[in-house]
Length: 234
Image (cartoon, rainbow, N blue to C red; front, side):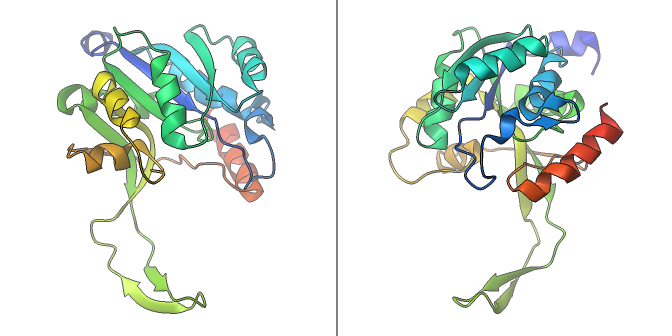
């Protein structure tokens, strides 16, 4: 997207969500060094380098706020306006991040801090689509064969993968209505923001992403993502 096209987008911000406990990873994965930077710094850097993003809010686990502030300072993230503590569930964490944004923000990109390979190009594509439709989400079509398991974890039946997409982030939305929707969540624990707005009747175009954008969940994910970063962004 050209500079002129970028300037035509609504005022846009990012909420980078890292408020989880890291229990599946076995600790605070976001501060671990990956390709010479803390894992968190890679996501921050991508949004810093995206011209259309005016400001960044980071959601941190309680007690990690100062550490996250220092990571951002060391990475020279000048767009950071706040580091806030997360809630007990994802929608609470995102709500706290949104509350730290000024009312002037029209579009907000919600991104998992544990997806360090996100690129400015993908962010811009998501913003561009959401600028016209009010929402967008990075995703990839499911290509693996899928089987439903029984109670003994044996194959029970094959699932038709036609039309199935695996969700990624960023997921971009109009900021004000997303904030209202998240405050009204009173049951369950939606695992992403698309789940929330879909239940409210929104139409969310997918932005197909064929570049690596994994979420670091297990220790085994770390070395693969680090190798990809060294090949693509170092």
